[in-house]
Image 1 (cartoon, rainbow, N blue to C red):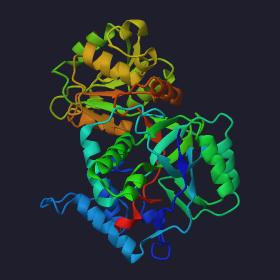
Image 2: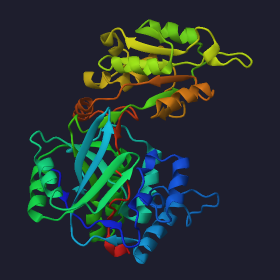
Image 3: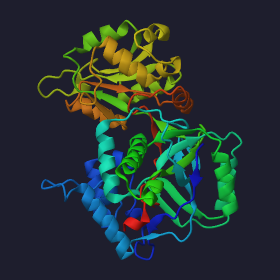
Image 4: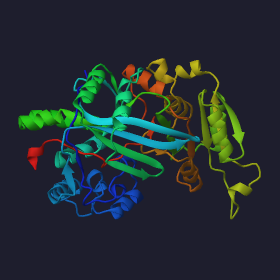
Length: 445
């Protein structure tokens, strides 16, 4: 059963850091190099220096991005840039933003949770890769802290936890209140023992779904196993069996999942005509005149198995693509027969096979087009505009656009014990790194 615990968070000292917006950052895995540079410039103590320190050409085993992150963490604690909160708490965390003309106020909480070493109660939904887990393990060994919360989901049809959080947040002012990229982030320290016990009681009966942070969750388990095998102190072993998590109710209205689009770099030399001919056997192929119309039409087909597709249009000399009569390269594909497609997708539940990302990778790419879907051939892009640019620049050969995965689909796949293809979900907004940090073992400092 999930075990929820309050903890004394490591937080930024407001006496020394006046503007919290200058020191927080998105999760490490959505920080591109230009954003990393921007965050470095924003503040000398920005948390990016811990979660994603820069690599240098002269890095060594004793001086590298991980050892520098650990040195910064120790230094900031020693200098009082970071301080330990006064009392054990569960941290109420709200994110308020506008989407589709509607104001959304998502409320959750950050606490410690016991690791599910045997994978019985925590249900992941995405595959993990070796390299990111090794990267995060190196960092955890060096810093010995949970620098960012893992994003978790739970079911609570009676909204018992949310009601407690809302009631308690009305009684005091948040100690963090910042606006970043059109999202308002607020954090309260909930120290009321009675309220905490009620939350612990409700959460103890729940299955937990990982929304975001699969690599960090697997890393936490690997780190705990490593400490046990190495004969570390009992204090450090006990601490390592818990991790910091951000919990949100699994509810459609407050959970926004954004799609992640695909850029195919090598299309085996297939021409536009060959691609359309192959896909036309299984899909209704609709040609559009603009990118805007492609995305609008795809959205209209959100209840169908449909994809947007953009192909480069050959131009000669100084001719611009938009001036080539009738040459648009914009298409929407609608699957004709899902039952037939399933027969080419190998093993897996009907729920897993019905995911658009599964159909795209296993049926469209592998079976129809016979194109590799390995990461070195696929680039994952959040912004549709960037996907179109990826084709126009000549860096990729095909852009595929998807509708977002539904929350109910995530739940069903996780309950089957199955894993989605990578980048099947992009939960928005992400919990910020740097709001609260959890030190694994205080005695090491």
